[in-house]
Image (cartoon, rainbow, N blue to C red; front, side):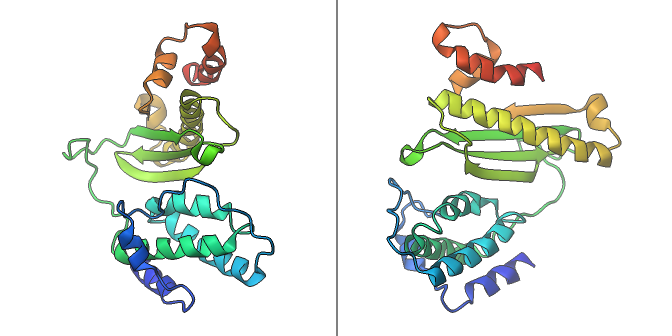
Length: 239
């Protein structure tokens, strides 16, 4: 039971959820906006590092099963554990405050519905939703991908991109390529479950909100300055 697991997680003595800190955050999201990367501590406390690793490991288990809304916060904090555990512990209390206020929020699956909320039993469609943030805190971009099967969420990820992008368009194209990779791997499993229905008559769709990135995919001809982006988008057009 995910709700019982969350209650047990919140009951650990040194993990006092900072509900007041969470309530002071106007957006009330798992992680407040962080403009700058925390400074590295001179001599991180090994016990604090271990506590943070344990907390993030348990939150990761929860995020991978029924709380995709925690994925970005866990991905961000995991990269800072060994460098600034005190700051991670403080932000972790904010995550726990969010979790305590949303403890009843879990994924629930029922009848397949379309975009308008009407019943739709078609399980031959895989939709990938991709979005990216270019160079937050002046570092590599962050991306999030959702995979929908029959309009139901079945896979997700939120992580730093593997290398720095030179523009928001390139960051979005990197996300689209990773979404394609996720969709192809998911499609292999679904084809086994659906007796190759997806191969014979299925639909595969990637959605994004970056107009310049979509334009490069639809009309690849353009100035020489966007040549590197056209090369990156070629893999999407080829498949």
